Amino acid sequence: MFTEILDYKVFGGTKKELLDCVESFDKVNIISGNPEILYSGMKDEFLNKVYNDESAIIIPDGVGTVIASKMVKNPVKEKIAGIEVMGEIINKCEKEGKSIYLVGAKEEVLKECVTNIKNKFPNIKIVGYHNGYFDLENCDDIVEDIKIKKPYALFVAMGCPRQEIFIARNMKEFPCKIFMGVGGSFDVFAGKVNRAPEWMINLGIEWLYRVVKEPFRIKRLGVIPKFLWKVKKNN
Ligand code: UDP
Image (cartoon, rainbow, N blue to C red; front, side, top):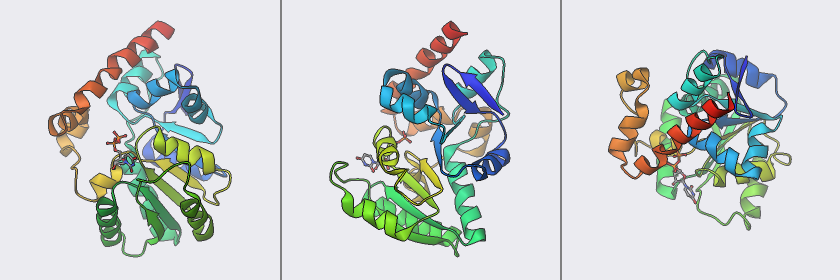
């Protein structure tokens, strides 16, 4: 079910199998393993520990990670986009009467995101939310609120490594089952940023759409060849 890429165990099953696998954990931290995230873990000891922790599942979120799995001759069954997993978890929580909590993004984006989630999943219990612009060293009020509200799933959209730090520091204390850093996903739920059209997603060129829409991302793409080169060298 897992593919070894560099020193990571990347989930190799389908999205449906992932949701079943998540159930088998007491607490799980779902990591959206695109090349940028995985490469950052090669350079940073803290992130490396987070990604390799026994409570973590790394999903192959990105065509670069899928290519890497082919290079190590143990291809993952499919690319699994973090934002889709977030949607599936919300859907499951709605059906099962479980609650969610959202931390991240700008206040107005977060509010739109909450409204849109409620419209799409009318019975979902959103027990709390907070924007992502606060001092990580001084956020006891947010931490306490999450402890009191006891959400089943906590989604944190503050970009890497901020979201990983917030989750890792509090995971033991928080009474949640599912933790997930979701990067820019609240912006997508809020309708501020669109996902690429279906045909581009299917062709594996969603990254091209994002670069055209947000050109500052082009620099960040440089990490893909570096990551693949490392995979090749290690193989
Ligand atoms: N963000 C935040 N707090 C910060 C910095 C960023 O909540 O201190 C939010 C930002 O508003 C955006 C998300 O984090 O909603 C990060 O998006 P980005 O596109 O960088 O993430 P990616 O999807 O590339 O990981």
